[in-house]
Image 1 (cartoon, rainbow, N blue to C red):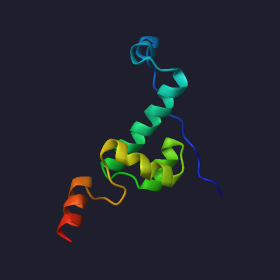
Image 2 (image 1 turned 90 degrees about the horizontal axis):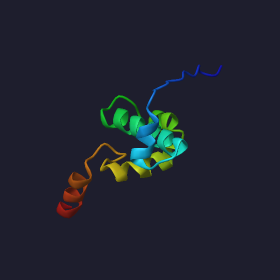
Image 3 (image 1 turned 60 degrees about the vertical axis):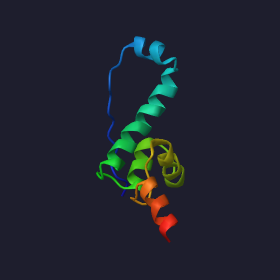
Image 4 (image 1 turned 135 degrees about the vertical axis):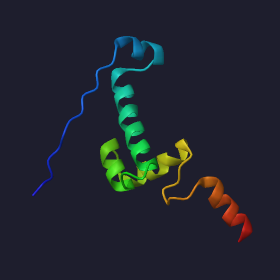
Amino acid sequence: MAAATNVLTIPYPEDLLLSLKESKESFEVEARLLLAVKLYEMGRVSTGLAAQLAGMDRVSFMFSLDHFGLSPIGVDPDELEQDLANA
């Protein structure tokens, strides 16, 4: 049995797209990703659920976390680098 899907609608002015110099499609893809990343960062969802929310596969989502300074293994990138230097 498939899980139910909900839809979130967020109104935003056309001026936002002009200000960001982005298309509607590009902005909406980025907004989905940002929401997923933030929920993951807060520990509210797993990488799998966040990837699903972002509309991408889990591996792609995990690689995208680096762009936001986050780690898919729950360790801060600087902390991981420090651990590797001390190993």
